Image 1: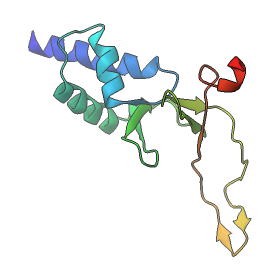
Image 2: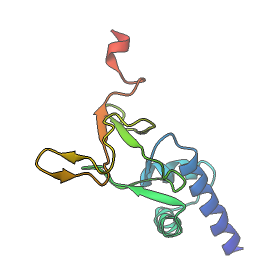
Image 3: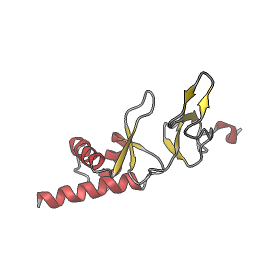
Length: 132
């Protein structure tokens, strides 16, 4: 019975991450998982995330000055993130706003292998210019 419960918890946590519009923090994962499994605990979420990360089912996203967030491991394509400064949600951007290909040489002789970009601003729901 306990193994079945753990499987249900794993499946629920993975589903929460897969259905999100961007990477989620642990507290967001816990809150959303509790809508389906009210008794799920924080320690279970951490253990499950470690297991899912080890198995490649989730990726850890590290944003400057933020707690770790998690997104599906199936998102191996090149993408960046946008952090709303009002609601603090993190969104996945499908396009690369800088377009610097690997192998490019920057001034000073720096050769680019890869890049990760985090943009900050206001999501469409929080953009105060819409209300003005």
